[in-house]
Amino acid sequence: YLSFQFNDELMVRAGRLRPPFFMVSEYLDVGYAYPWIRPPTEVYSNVPFTKFDGVDVVYNTGMGDWYTTIQLYAGGEDGDQVYKGSELKREVNDLAGLAVNAQSDPWTLRASYHQGVAVFDIIELRPLFDTLRALGFADVASDVDFQDKKAWFVQAAATYDRDSWFVRAEAIHTN
Image (tube, rainbow, N blue to C red; front, side, top):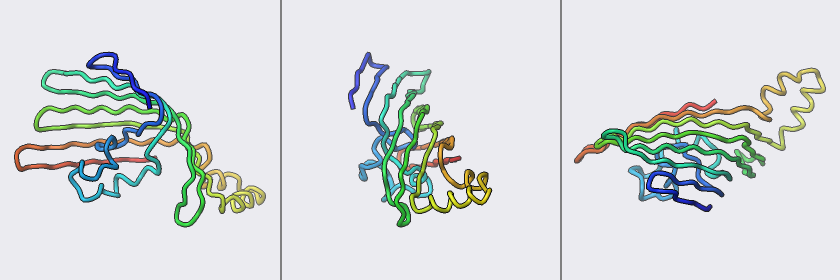
């Protein structure tokens, strides 16, 4: 990607970026940078991709005792993967989101919202969906066939880090 730093507060990046879904998204693949042996799969495995092509704007500012980072982004993502033995074509269009981090010793708070229009095409299931439609069950086929579905994702996290105490909690909800 390319980035341009306008001043100490504002940066714009364009190209292949990492979406800011989680507290440690920026360095998720750098194992020694986070406090676990591995990131909790209950949270960090809910999104099947770790990159997107697009643009983001990162604004850093101080608000009283709080150092705050606001990140807006937009773009899209596509790729192929194997999921439970099935070939899957994945595409997320109109991907956009907002992430806000606020830090004031010893606290770091974070909240984010992300949305997009998703297509998950499982090639082996196409005949099933075609059969359901041919038998008059088009609504059922549309409900289970993940084509052009609006998806959204929200996340909230808090970290307390003072002296020998370190506590982190992170929650997500995906639709």
